[in-house]
Length: 144
Image 1: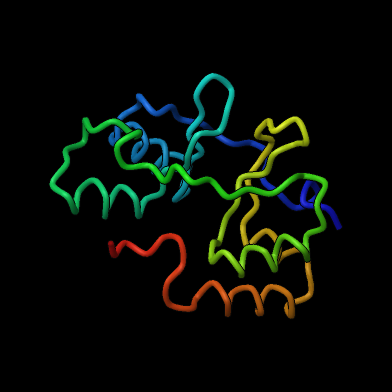
Image 2 (image 1 turned 90 degrees about the vertical axis):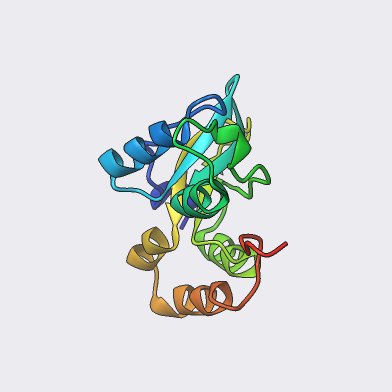
C-alpha cells in the first residue's frame, strides 16, 4: 500500500511570517496539532502545538511572535509513492507521529500520521513504530 492511499490530502499551510496566534487559531479550527510552514511554494518547516507551548509561551514570547522564530526548520518527510510499511518504520526510527508527504517534484501533497497508518494496516507495524517513537530522546526533545 502506498502513502498516497492513506494520507490526509487536504492540508492547510502557514507562512514563516504568520504569528503564533494565527497558527494556534488554525490548529483550533482544524482540530490538528501540526501545520506545515511554506514559503514560495517550498516546505520550510513545521509548527506544532508543542512548539507553541515550549518554544513560544515557555520562553516568554507573546502571541504576535512570528512562526519563523519557533517552528521546527528541520523537516522530515516522505514521498506519496513510498510503501506505508517503510514509512511507518522510518517514523519509528526518527521518532515522529506525523510526516508531511511530498510528491517527487517535492511539492506538498498531504500529511500522514501514525493513526492513518494504523487504520490501514495490521497492528504489528504500527505497534513497533509507536514503541520506537515513545523512546526517550528524539528530534523533538526540548533540552539543549
